[in-house]
Length: 308
Image (cartoon, rainbow, N blue to C red; front, side, top):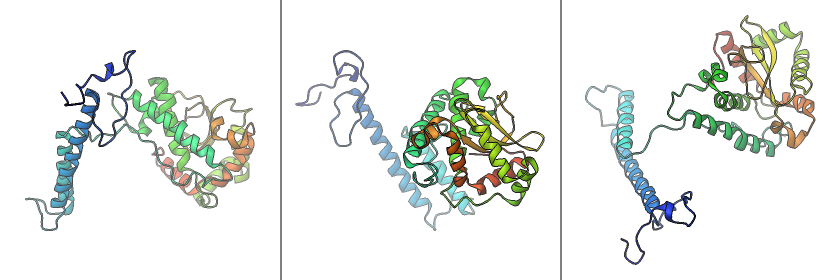
């Protein structure tokens, strides 16, 4: 009983009409029901745990502190990490984050202009990409959480959430990393340039064929166009529907290790280009990060997919 405030009521009885989503609890206010009291209690436990962790850190990092048998800084760091983890566990604060995080953009929203406008980047990253991340994390709750790269192989067989949201998360991570602010992406490495010339005749011919593969007449509706190192070690251009990618077993397209991919969903370009997808594809070359693509090509030659 709270003097002068009345008894706490279960939060599901707070409003007439039945169950209602709990409101957020602000620091410093009085709890109005059991749910809010619990939230504040958990928050207090977390603060106590973090305070204790900070104290341990300050003691363990003191240059005069050396644990028995610990002959180097790595040993101190390991012990510190274990101690902080134990404290957080006792306090009920989870160390585990979601399976996958929304990757921060490696540049400002307007850094790719004029090829890709600021508004498109905001919606594309903060809304569309974030939805894929949220949904694949929901699908993985209580299940084994593989690396994002490993998830791709069996995504089609594992079901729509893995295929669409798992694929969408991987594809967009790759997309953001393979772009750079205008004028900073460099040029293909000599090794990659030679491979492109050998496979397609010239860089100009490669770009023309890539753009053609991503045009509406070739990839009708939503999807991606890719440069892939196939199983025979040759560079090929392919496209995939929706959020599929060449890493997936059973993909409708050439399987292999992708080193470059362009998103041709309408949300990737429509605010600026409307129905003119070919114009978007042509302008996109100005923001390709060839340094990153060249690095992924080296990885692919060693049999490794792009870890994003």
